[in-house]
Image (cartoon, rainbow, N blue to C red; front, side, top):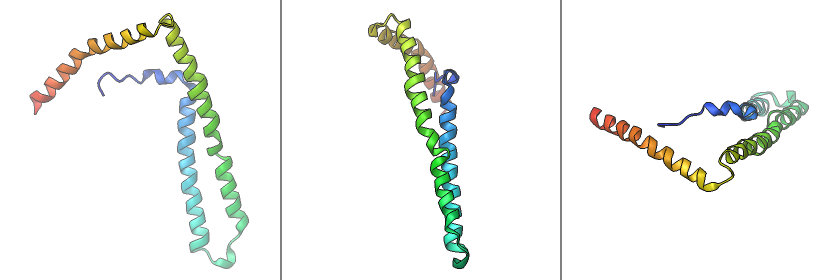
Length: 124
């Protein structure tokens, strides 16, 4: 996307932690599914130890899944609120200044958008 700058994401310390918790949770779901499938489908029924599946299930809930809520709170409420409150304070807590900033930024980028579209049209 033209003009998209994600350089400020480093400001949020828990954004990466939250992302990693989600990735690890998805990994844990796959691990749990694989273990349960192996245990109840492929393993000999006489060799099944139910304590292993219980430990896998409790490990899933006590693992990265339990980290998602605290990281979400820290990122979405605490850090984001501090960031947006600071941005709002920079504009003297006046919403009209914020709206003007958005409009003037779009007006400033309009020529870049037009040139990009003209370049695309010229190459087709």
